[in-house]
Length: 334
Image (tube, rainbow, N blue to C red; front, side):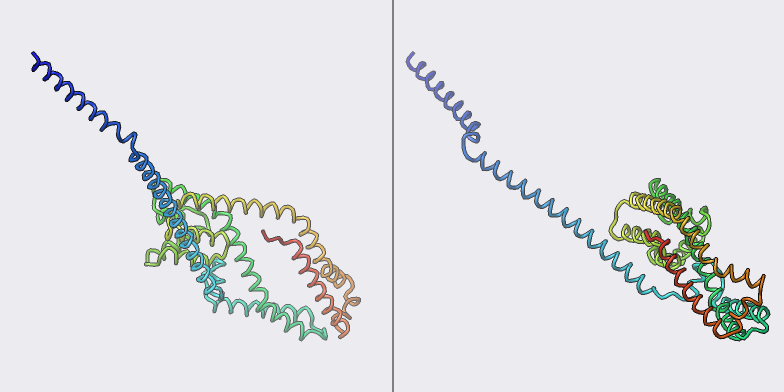
């Protein structure tokens, strides 16, 4: 009976010891410093991982900024290298499919016509030889270049007015999954002039092996507008550094439309000043023409005598200065 009690006691002690050891093994990490050490190690590791992530994000941002700066530097260098403008480029900007030789022939014909008209209108004037030479020079080098400049300005204005719509076509096409080249082809097919012809030239250059950045650089050479330069820079940066092309071009389209609205506002505000400047500039030659038609003998001393010629030269000089000052006052850059 004693042996049974002893064995029961031993079994109870062993069971209690096992339970105590199990409880101690489970509770030991909570009371010892290992759990705190593990927490500290986890916190340190987490902080290090966060710092490494922040550092990697900063490195990525710095690398992206460097790529953007390099792209802008390369584009600026290429544009400065192509800064010189020849007559062929000016004819391309005006949309004329003509050679420089044809332009010079037309200029010579215009100069001869102006000299002939002056010779026939002033047969007996003392200043007739000088007037003929001046008319020949102005007709050859002045009037054709003035007309060419006006054609370039008018064509560039049309291009700027339609560029925002063309960029919107690219934005919608990229958002719908079309590649950029397909969007450019849509613009070349469906946009009005001169957008379609210029982008058609870009597409055709790509077909013969020219890269898109080089084709856009040539477009900038033909259309030296800030909006076209912005478009070239955005596409070049997106190709080299990546990014959301549709968002960038959407922002560019909004900027172009804001600039157009600002230009229209400036034109409306400066309309009265331009009208006044035109009236003041046309008044002296208009009065001179009316006096010559009504009383030619009264005004002919201005053309027949040296003193009159000097007065005409001084008057033209000061009138030119006044026109330039008024032009500077009513033209705004924005």
